[in-house]
Length: 129
Ligand SMILES: Cc1cc2nc3c(=O)[nH]c(=O)nc-3n(C[C@H](O)[C@H](O)[C@H](O)COP(=O)(O)O)c2cc1C
Image (tube, rainbow, N blue to C red; front, side, top):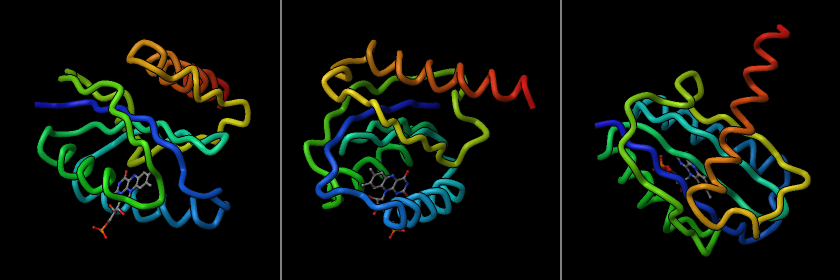
């Protein structure tokens, strides 16, 4: 069963680009191996991440992410069965949001709005290419 899980968290320290790059490289290599796709958003010291894949690998990854000291206050926004992936071509898509307002992401519907914004931008870019 395909699952999509989304959480928000607070970065423990300011993430410089090399540290983020390193995190993403590791994440993408692992995710490709484990059939996981998704999106990582970072802005104003906050993360929002979407993980999608089979339920067991998604749960196993989320358990590792929960105990990662690079962030805290990890808060699950939703976890639900899905029929298709939103991020099927990305081992982990990434976007930095300069104007990210963490107070905005409090529940499933605000998290989905962020995800839809990202997907809409991607669709526009793909059409322009
Ligand atoms: C915000 C955040 C997002 C992360 N996303 C992923 C991810 O998508 N995939 C992944 O394998 N690790 C991710 N990690 C890293 C994991 O917490 C963990 O360090 C890593 O999976 C360990 O990999 P290893 O078991 O191969 O050493 C993330 C960590 C943070 C702080």
